[in-house]
Image (cartoon, rainbow, N blue to C red; front, side, top):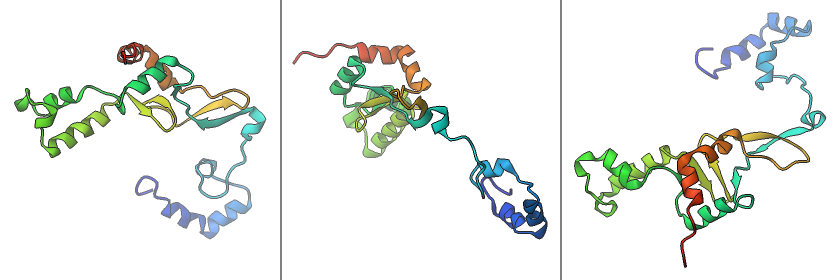
Length: 172
C-alpha cells in the first residue's frame, strides 16, 4: 500500500491471472478478508455465543440518582476546567479578564479548548454520562442489560467527578 487504507494495488493484484489461479486452488489472504475486503471469512455468529455488541449505555441517570441530580442541575456539556481557567491559560496577558470582556474569537477559542479537555461528556438525548474516551460498543449477554464500558466505570474513581455528582441539590 502506498498510503494507509489505499487498496488500489491490492484490487489490481486480485485481478491478475496468477492470483485468480491461487483463489481457485483455495489460497486466501484471510487478514484482508476479515477487514471487509472481498469475500468475508465465516466467523461464529454472536447468537451462538450468547453475547452481542451494543452501543455503550454510559452512566444512566435512571440507574444512579446522583447522575440524575447532576444532569438536572447543570447546563454543562461535560467535565472540563472552568472557562475562566481556560481563558487565563489561553490569554495570560489578560488574566483578570471576565468572560463578557473576551472577543467572540477569544470565546470560540476558549470553547474549543473546553471541548478538548472534557474528561466526561453529558449526553442529554440518551440521559447518560460517558467518559470522553468511551468505547463505542460493549459486549453484553442478550438477556442482561448492557453495562457501561470500563472507561465510564472509571469515572467513579475520578475525584472531580465524585465532587460534582455528590454535590447536593440547591434549595429552590
